[in-house]
Length: 191
Image 1 (cartoon, rainbow, N blue to C red):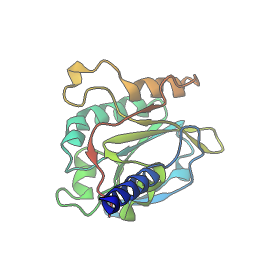
Image 2: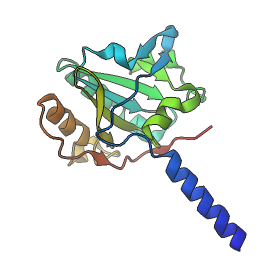
Image 3: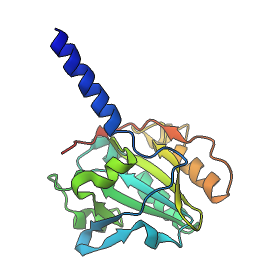
Image 4: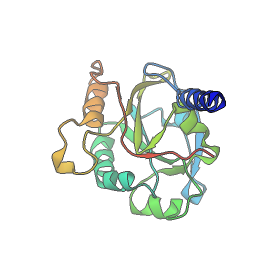
């Protein structure tokens, strides 16, 4: 029994450490990810964007599928306001649609986090989970992490539009009223 308790404690501690990642207010290190058609995206090359939204998503997750249309609409609406959405699959290599399929159908850019380096840096644990980065002109600062809104099941039932509200606040250079909301979704399988 004592060994089981020790093992369970070690497992909980290791999961907690693994999921830490950046905290709100942290400077985000530069990274590069590959996508469809050998397209690569480097964070520092997005210097013209006022705001960058990283969306960790997976085409096998039912929650991610429920959010597809909302995310595409948000990306379209906020692009004109200087916001760049980056869609990242932390489970690249999973069965299902390829990066090319996803990029052509819904998301662009749609990138693979091979080795889960970027998702680990951010502490992403679920799909979909979003991270909002504010471009200060010199660096990218994490302003929000977590849920897109409060109702993954039905868009018509949403009462709190977390991501939309944060984007409006960051773009207007106002303080962010909500900086962290636990994401609802599928656990990211670590490999």
